[in-house]
Amino acid sequence: MAHEQTFWSGWRERVTALRNVPPVLKIVWESGPVVVTLGLVFRLVSALMPVAATWIAARILDIVRIVLNHQPVPNLLWWLIGAEFGVALLTGLVTRGIDYLDALLADKYTRHVSIRVMQHASSLDLIAYEDPVFYDRLERARVQATDRLGMIQSIGRLVQQVITAGSFSVAIFVFSPWLLFLLIIGILPAFVGESHFAFLGYAKNFRQTPAKRELDYLRVLGGSREAAKELKLFGLRKFLVNRFTRLSDQIYEQDVSLARRRLIAGAFLSTIGTGGYYGAYLYIIWRTVKGAIGFGTMAFLTGAIMQASTSIQQIFSTLSSIADQALFLTDLLAFFEMRPTIRSKPNALPAPRPIVRGFEFHNVSFRYPGTERLVLNDLNLWLHPHERVALIGENGEGKTTLVKLLTRLYDPTEGQILLDGVDLREYDLDDLYREMGVIFQDFMRYEMTARENIAVGKIEELNNLDLLKSAADKSMAADVIRRLPGQYQQQLGRRFENGMDLSGGEWQKLALARAYLRDAQLLILDEPTAALDARSEFEVFQRFAELTSGKAALFISHRFSTVRMADRIVVMEKGRITEDGDHDQLFRLGGRYAEMFELQAANYR
Image (cartoon, rainbow, N blue to C red; front, side, top):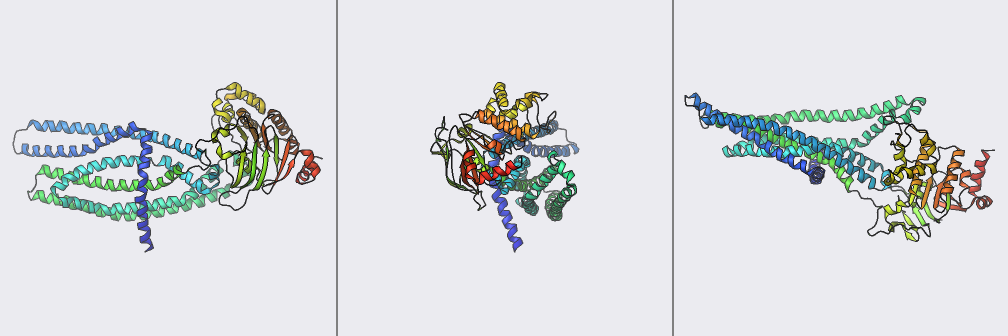
């Protein structure tokens, strides 16, 4: 009973999944309307060629039979032979044309849908990337974006097969409707079986997605430059290889088990289809022997039965393939239907220029989805214009989360964040971002040129080399770039040819240049100098203090020699602000700041 319910629920899911086909066809059309139109025209011509060739061959056979009875050779025979040659020539040309157009469409579709996936992924909320379920969906969407070319080509073949099968079926139906019915009944069981196993294949692949994602991670981990040192020193090679082998063996066994069951069932069901075809074939031979039909008609009908049988089987097989592919497209379309919650409202306000009152956290609380722990708990904080604020606290106290809320990468669970007295959610998001320059501790190391690594901070200035050099001077990245063979055109990283890697501190100076390039009203440094030594960090923050004069600035650092440069120091504990003042005030207070300062100072005595 349970197996029967699974069988029918699988079929319902497959039929429902066919609703995915029209949206994907729309994507295909958008990727290349001219190529799609030409492809359909070529397939229409190609679909009619077998019918024309079979009919011409039957007529030639009738004429040859007459000639063998000592009748004169009619001119029609030569015209028919010429027509047969023309059909064969046209079929070859059209087939090559279809192959060319399919290849062209494949490139256009892959490019178009990959761009759409990239654009859509970048538009989604940052918080989505905290969810493993989202990662599985994103992974399937990325794969489906390029692996569903088979379905698109299958739809084209289906059109061609339907026209061919329809043409031959009409001829068979005129001769004997029961004959056509016999063909279809013989083919139907194989179609049902193939469809059922295709559904099982989809369900298997869906279950395997997390394991395959782990395999990809292990594959990268086992061959990455970043992990190579620890893999050798900690002797992790055997551990990783064994883990990869165990997972891949599980997937292999599941694949083989399904393939074996499909082979046995498919062989049995295809026997039924073959029996249906030969039953119809024997009936035509019997009618010819009885003299009910001529040799030409016999040749046409036997050819029609063979072609119709093949085409109908192909139609069922193609429909099964399309339904199978459509199931996989569920995740791609679901991914495209995801909408960001953090976005600009209609008629959103432009960011204030200049900022007058500053930023205010008013009773702000925040928790990540799926957790009960409040990372920020009823937090209140002012960040005034023209003020440099240092944010300190132990790891995990919510400092980076506060920065992400301030920059509206997240929205508060409770409370408000105000800018000049207006909720951040009322401002145009893109315009708001233009007034913020942020460098996080986990900043990106773009494997691009040095020029591009700086320009990503304000990409519209990519060709403004003077401005990029000015930003590099401010961040002290100019000295790093001068030592590179290609200077601003030098490829960075080891991924591409002629690339040069940098030290952690050198990468950080390039990242800092991005923030200075923006010339924003609010500059934020979230521990971006962690890889620098104490002296270098002091120099960077001293420069930062000079360059942020007249701007709002927030920085996070664990080095108190740097923190002392701030106008205000804010101490966070358990998602709240516990102390707020300058260095002298907080040191005299004798609280958490004074305790941490003394602990760090003791290390230098």
